[in-house]
Image (cartoon, rainbow, N blue to C red; front, side):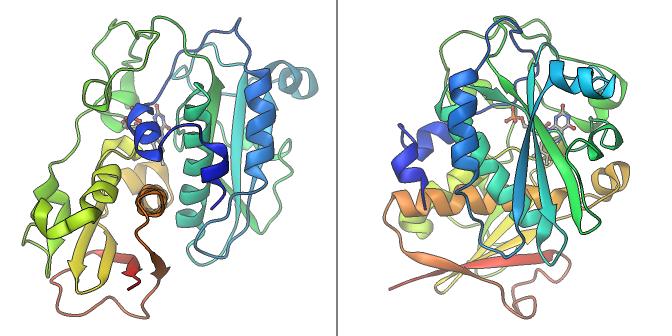
Length: 308
Ligand SMILES: Cc1cc2nc3c(=O)[nH]c(=O)nc-3n(C[C@H](O)[C@H](O)[C@H](O)COP(=O)(O)O)c2cc1C
């Protein structure tokens, strides 16, 4: 994992600091940070096998070449740079994209840069030519990247109210220093709603999680489309089984399995934290949904197997 040599902060701190930034300072350009992000983006690998690539886009040269704007329906203001995440289609492609792109976003956070996952509110078509998307690839998400404006207003418009819940109250100013995750992050589900022991519906107590309560807490703080937090984790024996509880509305409105990206993000937070804490293990994908866990209605994604 290359993050150890890159991140200048513990990954738990970086995860706690990240939040979606939607208003940027157009005058403060993140040139040095962008060079670092480009270098890092070449090195990140996810647990699955679909190649991910990134295209760095500058708003002014995009407009010059295409005569168009990078359309975000007014959700994002002031951003001068965007990063597009592209994945080769295949089994667990969206999970891989989520894992790898989140690692890049966390690195940007560690550099003091703001980002915001955009899976629904950008004009995908206008970017396809510029990123040279091939028939075997998908462009599921982009993020703006830059320094946040001193004041960020909540963009409380139409669809965003339905899709992107849980954002800051209107006109709340964003302080220049980072505040705690609890203050900054929109509401998150509670531990017993997300983490289970032996079977779904039987909440996992923190002491039953042992050292893994920290990687789980980092999953809990993860960003997700519409803040739905669809990840569910069941602990049994040496396995941590990760599931997706799908929200039909979110997937239907956005037109693809966007919540599989959320699961990739959760796997990323879990693994980076486990590695930082020296908790060995690896991802396995069982051939079938693990039996007798009461989770037959959920979508099985992958399991972390603890190493002795
Ligand atoms: C896969 C994915 C897609 C998202 N798409 C959008 C989007 O299109 N527009 C938007 O404003 N926010 C989008 N978000 C941001 C979420 O609304 C945000 O992560 C969530 O509300 C939690 O807030 P936080 O990121 O500040 O912790 C997306 C998040 C994820 C993970």
